[in-house]
Image (tube, rainbow, N blue to C red; front, side, top):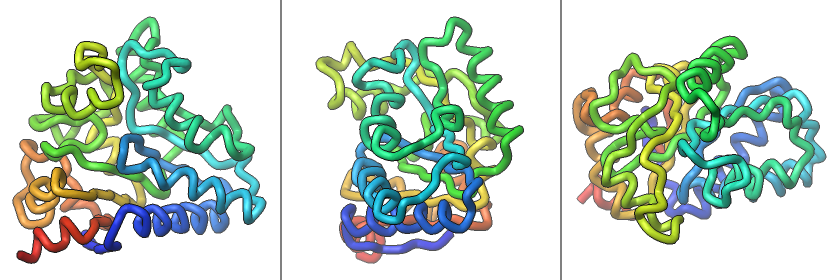
Length: 243
């Protein structure tokens, strides 16, 4: 794992957007593993600007999202489908046939999760997988206690994750209690992983990831065994780690 302090979210977002642009330009058939949440909100608009500026052909680029809330259809304002389209896919000529996001309103959720995993496996390793990290060390919606062998499946969200995500909903009762999420084994297939974390709330999780042992109580710790991981942090976390 490489720990890189890029000072703040703005610089970090520029960096990741450029890394994605470089990949897309060098590998026109690349597969991107994409994440959502507050950590990623500046990356996708900046990537979109760069793609426009460079007139990049996206027709053969494939994207897989980490997760989606159970019970939300694609038109729901808080679905990750809406998030991705508003921030990225609506602004460039992406091939909708190559955009993969789990269906949170699928009639059979178990079948949907299985089919998503099979599709991910058949298309091959993502060239870059973006990740955020939860305060409890989750990546995707793989909460503490998740098996390192886990694949895409329906997961129950912990109270702390529901509370953290409630800022996007009218009330905490409106937050879905389940999601379809790539598993830890699914994530680890990526050729390169870029994890981003900013601010005080992520300090302890990053310290445990960087300095702690590999344990299923900290799902992100599986990344310690991946050969190509960049952990992008800000001054707040860097100073905490070096106090």
